[in-house]
Length: 110
Image (cartoon, rainbow, N blue to C red):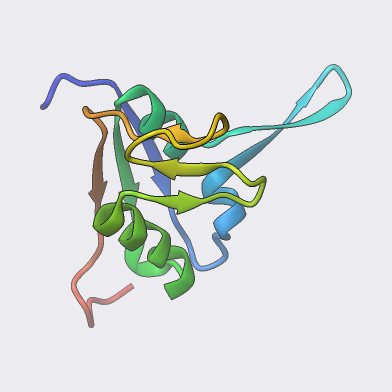
């Protein structure tokens, strides 16, 4: 409806914080770690739709709370997601970035 580029992630009870941040890709027999749809949306100013947020563990959902509330995250590889660049490795939150979390009401049948 917005007519904007978007990324999509569906969460489940086994989703880890690492899966939110990085994707494992096998390329020419070599395992590489690339940025997840979440990091691509942050850096390129896309809309990220997070589906089934109610299914994920609290520490996974806390990532979105930190991002929405403070506009910052610290990644496992030492990079940081920030509103303004302070270090060379920082990922700056694009002004067009939007976060949409979808979840069922509490008590809703699974």
